[in-house]
Figure 1 (tube, helix red, strand yellow):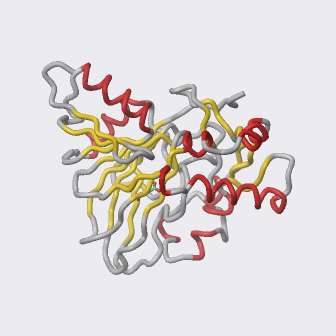
Figure 2 (figure 1 turned 180 degrees about the horizontal axis):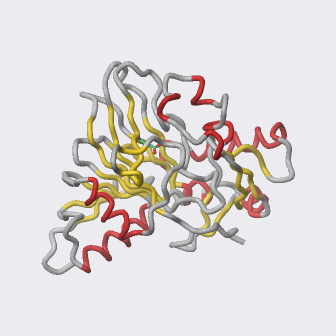
Length: 282
Ligand code: SIN
């Protein structure tokens, strides 16, 4: 990258890369190419000290794809395209505290989410990511082959619907759209739209069962996959500071927001950008 101070440094052997030496508001063409390549290669990319207004956050998001507004999250005042990921001092539950990938309950799942740190607790509130290419590649050949023939049902009903998980917690006022819940069916192993590589596409928060299998029959295999995919060697952990920005690929990673800051406030702004219908790896 001639004339640029940009550097891409892997976070761990598992996933993720931190990009330094750039300002996402003013990227040269070669920096933009480098950022896109890093996103395709590492699944999640992190930037520090990006002082972005909501408009600048939206401008950077739109460089990737049109915005896919989340219909369940409360929006930032005056910015319907920016979702608030908020935990108040008095709340005990956090948003996204279990492994998941955003919008897998949609038939066209979002490409990714750009999360910007606005207010952070003194300590804690990190986010973990896990690599779904590695999760698939490291299964035994017999299981890999069986999974290639399966599709799974994903749903938002049990999370955002009337009487569902979040509704029973002190986070209930953070969500809306309980009449807009629905289901989607995706291949269990997808051909990743950017890299062409096979990736595991089930997650503990939204996947309910394999298509044609009962929930009960699906559970043991899904739980095995969840335990496998969350192995520490496939993960990275990001420690936020004000102005930190992460952009993750929902088709290549899972994420989990660590809830270890009781009694403190954390406020993040999330913009989710549109993806495409997912194809099976084989
Ligand atoms: C999310 O699950 O989208 C939020 C992650 C976080 O707050 O760290």
